[in-house]
Image (cartoon, rainbow, N blue to C red; front, side, top):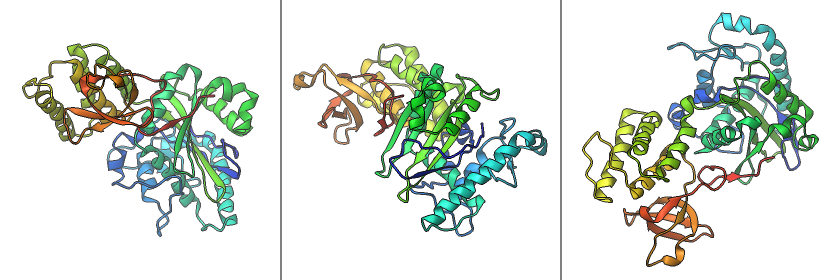
Length: 404
């Protein structure tokens, strides 16, 4: 969905909030966005800076990738989407889609232009550089790219949205001046009717969400959700951008967590086979897939003493399943892998302690480094931890705020 709205006040701690809202089909970014963007990683929370030529290269890449605003199709191979000449945000795969969406886009196009003028005026007030509408739009697109490049953030948001999908949540992601990025969930009972919601956002934002979720273009609770990205600005002009997001194809992110739960609660050959099949979906290239699967087979021989013929799936064991589950969280999902220690003999006093696996122990390949709650770091074998699910899934190093 692509609807512009008036200025909002999204949980800011003083200062003005300028809102430039646009729709971007987030599933079209792909899980290999970093490679698609040539390794460019803009920092948060500062504003991306346009190049001397006036076109931000990150936004240009994103602009070429997102979907037609009417039919949600990608551009044909070898071609690009056609953008509205006035707002430079709306994109269409052909003239027919642009014409069919003309009446609907006419009003929002004007609103987007007004929001851009307000944003440029606010920049001038604080002594910032003058900018064109194209530069403002590119900067806004680049902010979304910046958020998508935070490891595990997209997956964390998707899992939150999926778990609470019956409550039609808005996933609110905020980049603070401290560099910390927090994630919070606003449920329908809050954003749709609760008067207290207006302590955080204004009536225009509420109306926009009602139009998005209650309108005929909303794909459905099992297919799409809304993410609001907020960036604190040292100059006091805070920016929030919303993006309608589609759940990953075949719900591969959700499916990954389901496989991990199965791997760590039972020892069944089919669960390990599911994990290997999941890697095939998640890996970006055949070479990447080969490297990861061969690494697992190598560890089954080196650490667990199980010889696995090339191309076959290892015999499952509890310790091997724990390792594969960790690799899924670490490599594919980039989420925290929470564990509880058990079965320790010489360090029996640690049994029952909980923490997060940080990495394989670089000194001892049979062990993993675990940061226990409280900050203590210990090294344990995979047979001596069990995966636990402590509330919501969070990205590595992430901060989750209670939902409202």
